[in-house]
Image (cartoon, rainbow, N blue to C red; front, side):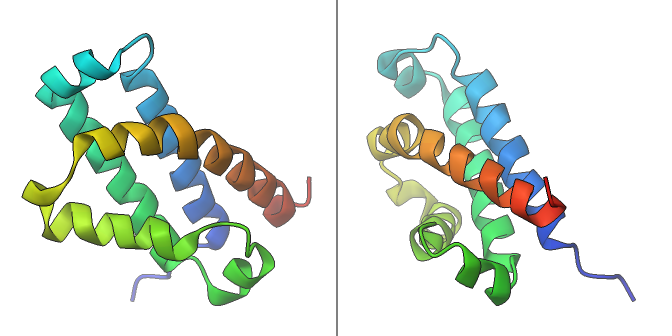
Length: 117
């Protein structure tokens, strides 16, 4: 039987996904994002990975970091997968621009806490 992944590894998955999005959208404007399906699909996929990793982080770790908007992150993942054609890409852009920098900071601090750094 396969062992469940650790919270540390899940947190690393989130940080890796954020780094991927940063790479995809470096020097990209909103209009370029909206007109490029590869960038939109790649970004959504990484946001789904973030949501899936967050869904599988233990309740104990989630309780230690109540400032993270766990339900919103997981909820967006569910919408992007199950209601894909209802996804508003301007909202995705706002999430990437406004929410991911904070999430990156929160998860970097979480990783430090999990690894004892």
